[in-house]
Length: 477
Image (cartoon, rainbow, N blue to C red):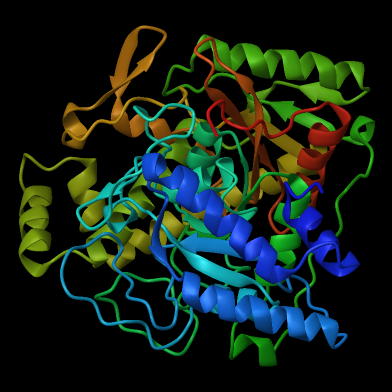
């Protein structure tokens, strides 16, 4: 019985080949077998999952069917799950959530069985996954390495076969970087199409209306592109009260055949060097796309300036962080911004509302350039990161360095590729496209036009099934 994917498992459930109770036990057994070395599923809800699985089996026998009925999965620890505390990796006493986050509620309504929650970076603020509450999560391709962050537990759980589907978040690459580092698929939805209510740090008030976060999204991680689409169909759509005012319908993919796609490929970033192995794998893919009949280009002048996109993302992010700083820390940053010691970081952290509005207007000019570019191109391909998964490093950010072909680069540059699509809320599907010379996974970003999520998902699916860029299980799992 083939049950590697969510679609496989749902097919087996529908045919009666297996039961939800059996799938839940298989998942629990896999978690117990491999997670001691990985530390991905850090909050377990096995007892409730078993009860829900039995109820799902009864529903199916009674003739009921729902999109994910009986499917076991996990979610990132940062989601509110009724009856469980939400810590974001912060130590201390946390009151259990009284309601599910909207995404979790939609998963349950679709029939999914929540097995537990996966590990995160403290306050989701690192590209590694570690915190004082749950400890460090390891990469299935090498326990001495990070799985990425902040959705590192999510990607590791899927890569190890603990669950076929996971759900995390992405602001500065928190879905895409772990997916690339662990060799799995992920989808960062167009900004705003997946409600974020119930996804907030423990100190934030729980408000019964949608709580969008600038540039941030919630999305799935899986082992196939088709599973990503299945998941997106379940979680996307307007939140209350918006659902009373409009209906949600994403446009279909632009093309169904690989040869019909117009593909712009980016291999060089003006602000960060990218490893030769990563560029080499993308170059091989480019040649294969041409041989398939795709129209392929490399002219970056048709896109928004990449340095401008990176700067805009960073300034908007710092402004968001500044809003949640303590009064003392904010006052100190403001004093630095007013003095000679203040840099771009301090100015962005404490920018006025007027300055933010000006910056947001600039963001709209970037969006217009993207729209023009996507009149000529269907997808844009680029690396996820400048390097593959690196060894754990718990030092302060300013002391960390990334190794790119023997050269040391600043740690924060790891996100420079993922920042390109973020300011304008573009959908991005991440797909594994090979291994580097050390045998570590390499990921590719498939960037699509805003609100055309099915185009990037379909292109990723074609790469997977037409060209064979598929999930490969880690050697020891």
